[in-house]
Length: 588
Image (cartoon, rainbow, N blue to C red):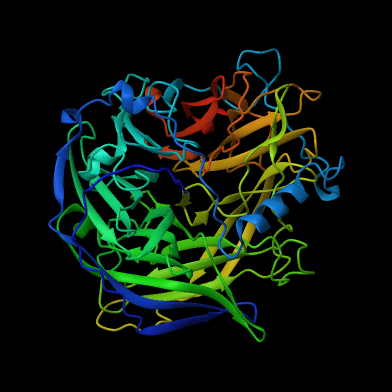
């Protein structure tokens, strides 16, 4: 979430209707995953802007540094969150015993004398930086990345830029609010928490962002374009008197799925009155590309048992990006992001384990259906809030590492979902993730008229992996993002740093690859994409990195590739980004 004070008199007019009409259940481990069905309404025809025609930001605009926002973890006060993070930060010099082998340090150079099986990047260049260009602006970056055969679109707080595949900037960095038809720094906060994806069938990019107007109404903004330097078609979706925080984005495969061809946007809704819910909305792709009327929504996600219900938060819908993928449902995944506060998987405060997988079907029809599955306590390693990371030589436990939510956009490829989180590694932070295979029945939701509404029938956690779970108080990894290629090889992009007496590395982006043929996961420690040792005292980092697949096309050597975008310390107390392209199959 970003909380910056800005001014704008521009208000939207949009119809807001949310009527809960049903509750859906699906059993898994004796607990029930539940949600409430409703509807939302968009703004009708929407509007259009041309990105290349938008004015560049003025020097005065770019010179303003936005205040560091307060963090929001649902179900916790700021004081409770800070206490949990403080308790996790460097509380022990020991690594987690079960992860003693997971101690990794990326070599600083791809051409060093360290033998590596991770392939070198075929493209690596600097992206946008703080304040779009000048080194002042929004903290942290909150990054989005999507790639077509011709274009790379990168979004950060509060900017957007388009590159070609070799790093050439096709347009200057522009204020993000512009593609939504808004002025620079619109509303109370601007246009923040951006995400972006590429719809290969439609050959269009979709960018979303959160917006909080001057009447205290929350909105999710959408904008789509084929040529991202040109015309963007935008919409606004209203949520009333609430902050729509930390929106996430996914899509179903476009082909052969007329009853479920949708985008999925989920958001943590903090109502001005004090309440909370996580809501996922399912506009049809045709609505986002054209006129946006009514569409289905689910909210009030909970895991219920004999002792009551545990409210869920920070849902991460998956991006079924491949045209060969045709899942019969739109999947979403989340963790138990409460630091063990409920005591569900052990003593209260001792961490949690397990994942919740959700399947939504019939979302483009009048028969929307949801099914949920909890993989169970003990199905994953125990995870808990990570300790803050270090900036070697400059500060100690001074870099934010967030909570246990799945922060990066998550992909579905060849029947697998590959999410990750930040978790405590014995003293600081590690990236813990999984390869998850969900299974569906045919029509457990009993939809009619040719509409199939499957329930989840099983979920297998096929692999668990961790980068620096054995790092202890020496090295740390955080804000991981994974992208697959069509062969289901994949690349992790994340931030790495260390203490000054251990390798002396400031926060910077690294990547590591894995092949589908690997017995384990990572076969080495990967490579840095961008790292510079500089002071950084702004604390906030992340709140998420970005990764994106790139199918064969006009990329070099015409081979499947993965791309990532992450932060590094660009200059004294400012962040920059770099964008990296990798061919994972070039490894062994």
